Image (cartoon, rainbow, N blue to C red; front, side, top):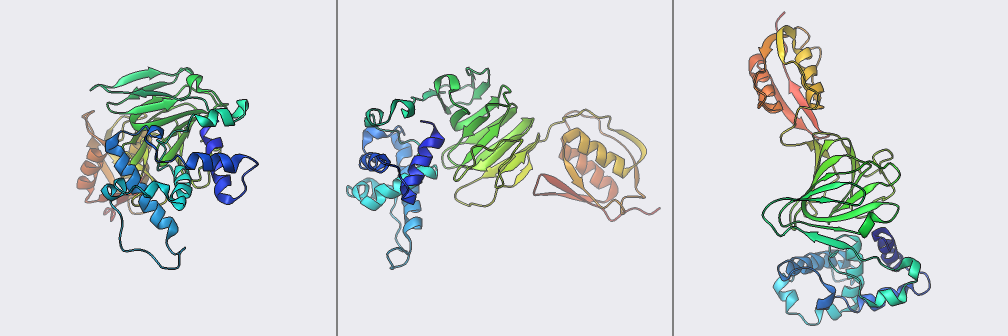
Length: 354
C-alpha cells in the first residue's frame, strides 16, 4: 500500500464512503492509537506531536458542541498524564484525520493489518536510514539518485523505490540529485510539503518544529502543501495550488503561520550563466539584463526612467554576490532595490539627466 493509497483509505473513512471492510480496519487500528509499540518517534519528540495533535483537535471541534471555543489548551505535559486522552472516541477519530494533515506520520501500521489486507494491497515495509554521525552521508538509491543526508536527519524509502512514483520521506535536511525518469516522478514528503521532480538537484529542510524549505540548484521542481496534494502533478503538469521553482528559487512554509506558497530567491543566488561584467559607458538597462541572465532572476524596473542612464562599471570579485553588485550599482546611480514575491527584484530609479 502506497502512502497515497493509505491516505485515500483514511479520507474515505472520514467522508463516510468506506468500502466493505475498510471502516472496520480503520476502527481496529484507531483503537490502538497511542499504544507505545505503534510509535517510532523518540520520547523527546512525542510530546511535540501530542501537543500539535491537541491543537488541531481543538481547531476541528470548535463549535461542534455548541459551547464555543475553549479558553484552556492542554500542554504536552498535561496530555502525557491524561490516561483517558487516547481512549476518547473523538480523539481516535480525529487522529486518523491528523495523519492526512501530516501531523502524526511517525505512527506506523499495526502488524494486524498484514493479515487483514489482501496480498495485492499489503503494506511494504519502508527502509529507514538515519545519519547519527557529525558529517553528511551520501546515499545512492536503486534508481541512481544520490542523496546527501545531513547529521541528525532520516530518510525513509521502499526497497527498490517500487511503485509508479519514486517516493521518499525526509525528516531533517538533505540535498537530492535525482536521476531523470519522466515516466516515474520522484516525490519527497516532509511533514508539511510534497516536492515532485522528474530529475534535477535541490535541497530540502524539514526539521521538527521549524519551517519547511525547498531550494533548487538546477532544473525545476513542483512544490505543494502536503494536505490535499495532487500526487499526479509534475513540473510539466503542475498542480493549481502548487508552485514551480527554478534555479536560485526557494519556498518556505510553516504550519504555525499558514499562508499560500510563494516562491522567493534563495539567500545567496549563484551565477548560472557566466557573464562579462565590464561595462564602459553602457546603458544601465544592459547591466540589469546581464545580471538577470547571469543569476536567472527577474529584475523589474521602469525602462523609461533608465532610458537615458549610462554607466562605466566593472564587477571584479567572483566572491561578490548578486546583492553586492546591486548595492554598487544602486549607489552609483542613486537608486535602490527591494525583494518581492514570486522571486523578483524591484529596481527603483528616478532616472538620469540627459
